[in-house]
Length: 129
Image (cartoon, rainbow, N blue to C red):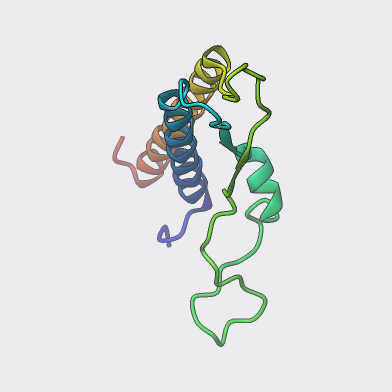
C-alpha cells in the first residue's frame, strides 16, 4: 500500500540534485585560481523536474506495463556557467559560487523538511505518532 510514494521519491531526487550541484560548485571554487578554467553548473531542480513532466508519469517496472517510463536517469547534465571575465581567463567568481552554495544548502534543507514532514504524516496515518 505505501510501497511507492511519490513524495519520498521527489524529496530524494531533490536532495540528490542538491548534492550533485554542491559538488560542481565545490569544484568551481577549488579551481578559482586555475588559469583558463570556466565555471560549470547544473540546471535548477525545478527545470529538471519540469523536463521530466513533473513526475506525473507512472513508472514501468516490467516491459509489459503500458505507458510507463522505465528510465531512471536524472537530466542533471553539467553545462558551462556564465564566466565573470577574469584577466587570466578564469571565469570563476567566488562571491557567485558562495551564493549558489547557500541556495543549494537551502534546497537540501527543504528536501529534508519535506521528507521529515511526510514521515510524520505517514506515522500519524498508521497510528504510531
